[in-house]
Image (cartoon, rainbow, N blue to C red; front, side, top):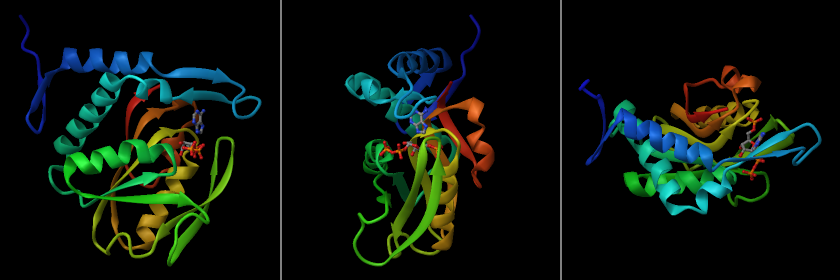
Length: 195
Ligand SMILES: O=P(O)(O)OC[C@H]1O[C@H](OP(=O)(O)OP(=O)(O)O)[C@H](O)[C@@H]1O
Ligand SMILES: Nc1ncnc2[nH]cnc12
């Protein structure tokens, strides 16, 4: 029998075959909706995956495995994007025992903030981060549910860089390949699933 490679995560070893089965399972839970929230947009809904706690566990396990393989214990902060990025970012930060910091849409965060406009597949926003949330020199991973045109992650990476911190990587569950969003993101991008 061919030897199967193993990928390492803190206390967990999974074969490539199991990983691929898990990814197929997660993919099967993502639903698509035509013309939502606007005419011409094919919307990928992550929420059905969260109705299934086994599926959420697989998502988090896979992301942790990737993070520990790539960055070991070098990550200081998980930064989650408003709002679906919060769902995954907070769980990752809890499991890693490190800080969670949100990037929010304008007007939601108190205190001194820095802001930047961003455009996305179906609209535009102004994104904000609290100025004292991340210290100069800290190493940050950005987390969101989905990469479409890349506008949201592009602006988010810039916000972190304005604070003189380092973006190690942007992590998303879903990447929409046709929109070539990763070309717009000024950091490396890891996606769990692509469509
Ligand atoms: O790659 P882009 O074209 O920039 O699009 C991706 C962004 O669009 C969605 O956010 P949305 O603003 O709809 O927020 P939500 O999570 O609050 O629904 C998604 O969660 C990403 O943040
Ligand atoms: N097609 C899409 N589906 C879900 N969320 C999105 N955010 C931007 N584009 C999206």
